[in-house]
Figure 1 (tube, rainbow, N blue to C red):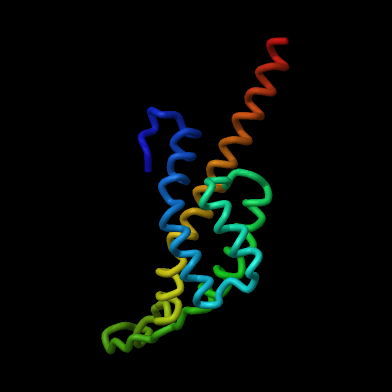
Figure 2: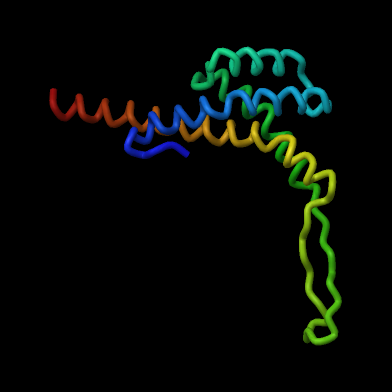
Length: 141
């Protein structure tokens, strides 16, 4: 999203910061729709998002705890439709489409899922920079 001249880590952190507000709105909608089972989890994530505290292991665990069941719900909302075509040797073709509920869930959860991906990307870059710094200090000490 951001200019890569800033450096990949800075850019990744800024991507997360840009998503916080819309992801918080999506989190509210998911909770109101009863798609987040734990009030504590909802409250903890709301606080973390408000404070921008997204890069610790507890935040990652909370994000994963919401996203994993949510993705499982979205993934089952597909249907196969067969389109008849008399000119096709097989008589037609199959297409997979999201159900209306699946499309609604995907739209509602989209900003929160984007935050989840952005936080994980930033954390991987943080870990890579730490590893590079450690290797550098070992090489030059």
